[in-house]
Length: 132
Image 1 (cartoon, rainbow, N blue to C red):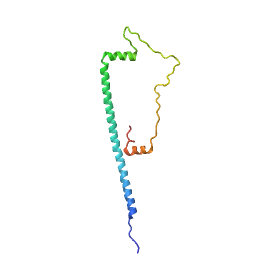
Image 2 (cartoon, rainbow, N blue to C red):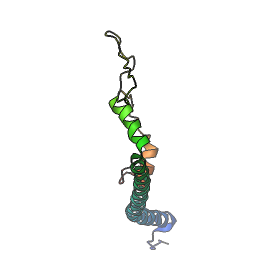
Image 3 (cartoon, helix red, strand yellow):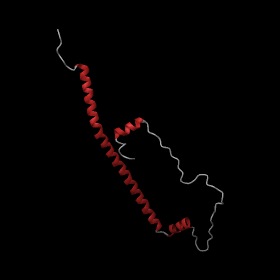
Image 4 (cartoon, rainbow, N blue to C red):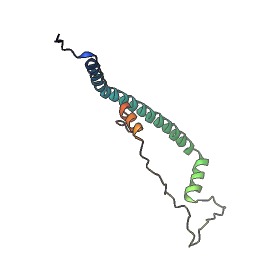
């Protein structure tokens, strides 16, 4: 007897289910990434706002301090080398030929390549979309 039944069989059915799962997963990754990236952007913006509020408070305290005679005197002495009448001011001079062993402003940083799994995780979670 010849079997005329033409179905997918168990193997074909599993392949079809796997293909459908992959299509659904691929269709869901990009909106999921976008959602996570937007949440990350909101978090970063909130952190920036908190930092700005803190900076404003610090600046307000600095403004309040500048309204005192003691702070004005301290700044005049520190930044401009001024002295009060009757005081003697001294200036330390570095002799010629003496070089600073650590030049100012020379920070050495090394860029490090992230491993592929971190890059994949950043892609899946949308962190590659948002800076920070």
